[in-house]
Length: 507
Ligand SMILES: Cc1cc2nc3c(=O)[nH]c(=O)nc-3n(C[C@H](O)[C@H](O)[C@H](O)COP(=O)(O)OP(=O)(O)OC[C@H]3O[C@@H](n4cnc5c(N)ncnc54)[C@H](O)[C@@H]3O)c2cc1C
Image (cartoon, rainbow, N blue to C red; front, side):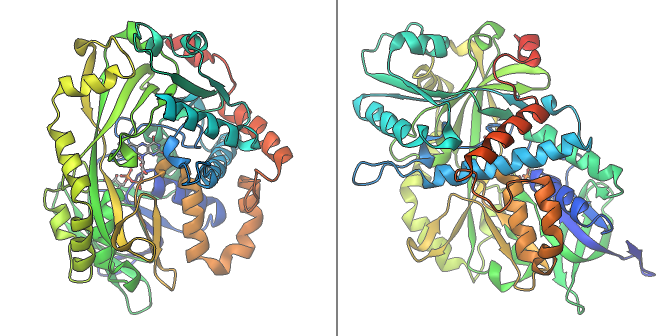
């Protein structure tokens, strides 16, 4: 880092935000270019406090083992598994990179952030059971989904999910799939570990520092205006490359940069709530992530699921998320976030999205107004005899879905994925969107690196392959390599099937 006479600083890389995305990009860059200076500016007092925090997301290691929205039914009745394959392959990259970090002692105690946990899908009703069976048939022969089981026999289901099956009086057909290679991930703990590792390699982490403006400099780099939230002091910091990893805060920052690639994009915030079980006897009776099917008209991020979680050395049970509407873009954001994100360049896109998504907005507002008892009714579809007093509500993180004009969807189309928006010269990149999110952080940050440092890729590729042996390859088409990777990541990350020491200690 160069300190200039006027108090400004100049560095190679600035990462805005200390969530899982910046933490992952910083860690990757430190391995690829150890000599580069990196600075992080985070507006809160700690790393991983917004969406990446363990209480703000569902902690599912998304690999499409149980999420039914990744395998839509086509009009001809067959199941489209393309998205499921893509997400599963992307999660394998994350597991390989985390294993590399553990094996090199760059982070330790993987059990503090990742735990093996069966992933299950559960459906009721004849049509849904037939959908699940078709999904199972389409996936179970694929090496990525090896080990998946299907059952529509209540006795078998009682073994798998006793809490869900006990006292179930309905005669409706019911079925589930189960796969033991799923994971629960504490992305908050992982973000903190990665940031602590970066700090030990002289990366400067600046907390309570909110980036307020981003401007081009005459040499093609960027100057950031940064305000200290406690002292009110304002500093200017220059960098050759900036990553906008502000989570929900990224859209405003991208707009401030003024790059043409950021024009015409809007954001639609969706809030979330979980119910958390406070009765240890109930918690002890469940051991899986069980995903259901989204209700008709509900957005994909409100698929209900009943999850065992491992948070703060405690086994917990969460149900949700219940989606809702709030104009904030961050949990700690402002009620004006949505309105101030509307600019002349995205006005028509936003208006079109508003008109198109009236039913969704109405649905989300209704969701917010739901009473606890109404939410308990939804929970009782999973646990028929769930008692109100055993469950508390917790507010989850905000997700800002991207809105843009697309060929397929027309003006103002709501997107449900993550998107990297970067300047043509690769000097700045921002991450927008929230799904599949943290699980695919390694894949998405490799995309940032490929887009922004194309001239370095030849030099960096051997190191990337050392960190992520399957980089650039399809694991589905290389079952042998997939087997090796499953074994080596399970070993490094402690993902040995069956009861781990941690589970035993927690039960
Ligand atoms: C309800 C819910 C459930 C989810 N479930 C899952 C799941 O099961 N599995 C999964 O993989 N993903 C899940 N996700 C998505 C996942 O949480 C996010 O994709 C991921 O955490 C985003 O990481 P990030 O680093 O981009 O953002 P964040 O973790 O939000 O970090 C952004 C950081 O930037 C800081 N910041 C913002 N603006 C500024 C500024 N101007 N200056 C300085 N700092 C700033 C913020 O304070 C914050 O610390 C879920 C999300 C939600 C909300």
